[in-house]
Length: 154
Image 1 (cartoon, helix red, strand yellow):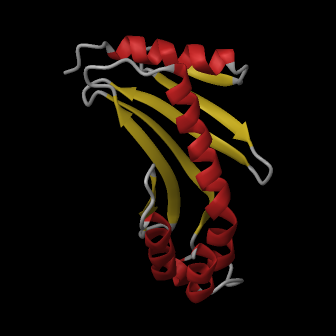
Image 2: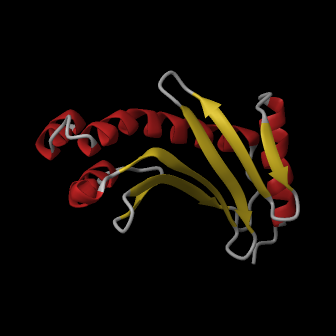
């Protein structure tokens, strides 16, 4: 368990979002924030939570596309291609229902997280989702092949 309290991290998260004048809903008991960030392409819904038992701040966003049953294997392949070499964050993929989510987390064990780091995490999360959302959609809708996805990722 960290010597920095999870509550302080949660308060820093809320303070950062307030400083950036974002609209969000917070659950102080669960140390969870729900926010929607609007980008050029799409609104991105985030669940941001402080996981006290793990000393982790996690951002998670379920993408608005699900791979249909006949495209589930392709969905697994393209999410893995997207993840390969990714330094910050990763896409989670549920092959059972075709859901794709982006997840980024950081540990706060023995440290305090700055507003700058929290804001950077949110920015990187948004830009990564923005970079891949359309391509995931195109593969799911048979508008792009896996091979084309690979070429676009090079």
